[in-house]
Image 1 (cartoon, one colour):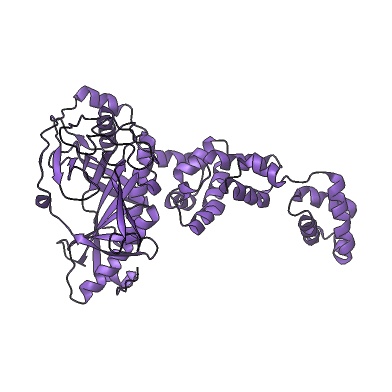
Image 2 (cartoon, helix red, strand yellow; image 1 turned 30 degrees about the horizontal axis):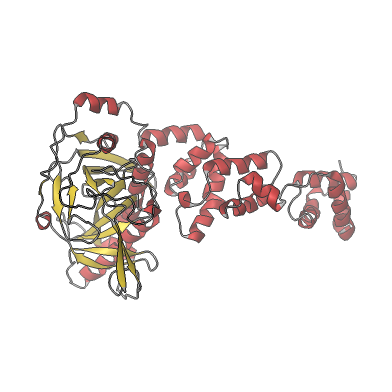
Length: 500
């Protein structure tokens, strides 16, 4: 899709305008069955095989509330420091889309299960407190596939609909307006979504795999001239499904809206589509107000009144709060503030932690995830935790290095094999023949050859210039295809040249 839009530079936009954000995050709950029926929720089933009269909205079918989804919702609300409603109910949200077979969505409107919470995120050494307006329960829609053209409905040859996802339990978490982030607004948005993802994973309520749509963010952005307090007109970029894209979409909208306002044009309140390939947003539809959805109480479900004693029991099951966890790990791992901040910025805290739990040192875990693996994620255009490698496998690679079976150079080849699906690190080492050569006879022959080929360097080493042995070591390592113990090679060279 080719769209030419004039943008203002980010720095100029921030000099003239103050961004205000509102983030709506949808989390698919990891229950075994759907929100209002007994259909399974497993990912990847053949289209339209996990459906029934209820989630297809057939006449005469009635919803039955999923108790596990209610429990998950309450635990999420508590973890977000929300007030849990003593009484709440569901509502019908009416709209006509092909991926919603009932032509309405069972959601919560003015009486959600959790309200008025907050959560903290850290960006570049600053702590931002994000207010939570509400967290409410609802059901997911089906999935449309537009065949032909750009993959969107405009220009498609035809469309298909898979209703397997229709009815899967969702929690929608809506922030209060996020003000004061300034130039850090895109990073704050990313950090917030990353923190939510980390929290949902710790709670065990969802796998939150963004590439599967299990966590999606709608990013509302508006601008106001510096010094003013009234909010500007907002746009809502829908269904952004990666941390990187959340940051890029917010930044793009700031630059796009700033250019329009600087020309004296008005911002259209609308939903917009995010295009991952081009890094731009394009218009979707005009943004509806609440009255456009014609909400009314769901007549087929009784109101919900969580028992306060049950709520308190659930509170006791909560994991360590993210801020306390970050503080504990920072103190335990011994990194500098900058080193720890890099881990947070990369969204790698849980990966490093799991790798340490699997036996690696914090330094080794950080080195691999923020170095070699981060580079591969960037090249592939995916998030770190989307790479097909586990923390346990990274720890296993480090164990092989510590045991002297491979070195850091060979470890990179092991990562190649694991990421290519060739098996465990041990299996990749065996299949590719990557083990370090420790046989003195083989190493000695290579050392003798390197000395014979470099007599001038060898003479310098004999004369006491031990540091000059580097080229000889390099020659041996090259001959051994990097599969030699460099320390042992150095030792053999010095022995051959009579240097103690």
